[in-house]
Image (tube, rainbow, N blue to C red; front, side, top):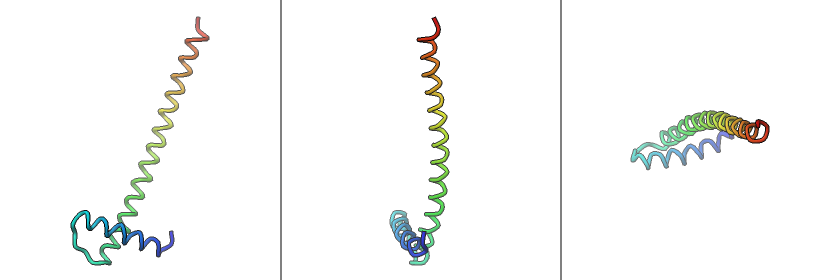
Length: 78
């Protein structure tokens, strides 16, 4: 992401966060809070998506195995 976009998004995120938390901060501090928050939030979100992606694959594998066992017991084992 270009540096200008990062500063603008950081400023907006920092402004919103400081207002939600009722903190009076300077413009530089607000932008720094927003940029650091975006970095931390992005890393946490990326980690959660990775973990959830692996869990979704595991759940899909278990469901597929259950379906295969059901088909085997229903049609092949008599």
